Length: 172
Image (cartoon, rainbow, N blue to C red; front, top):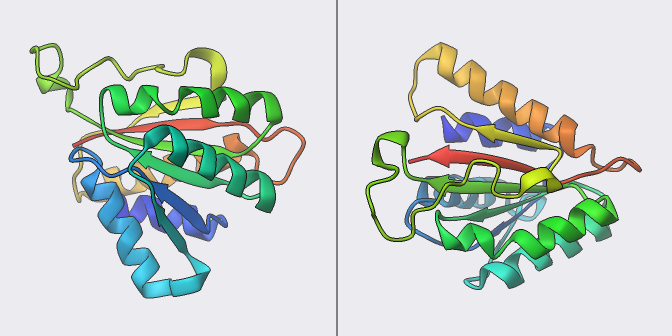
């Protein structure tokens, strides 16, 4: 599921991922790490425990390369720390793709710490927002996650004057 998503991102030219580690985003981080281990210097992986710094570092990479850069964080308030960089990506037309881990719908609204509504967390400052289905290996779900990855890249429009940030939220 996550590997299929990253496979499509890489096919579309994503070469840099910045991770702010956290428990809910572990599947995203592990697949990014595996891709880096397999492809080495053609797929760069950076880790920054400070979410705000990580988001601005990803923004700088995307601006410098004119390619979409992914930034990964866990659920809750970690995502809010990406907000300033997302707003800057919007106004500067930079292709930043935010990948966030989240609690599944069945665990939302139960008073757990680090839980907040991540749907449209960036309001209108992202060109597209996608809520992913819960993970699974059935062919229809894999086809869906591949399609969302392609649509996220198209929406980010890397290398054009219309580049913009995109947010993809994964329930784990």
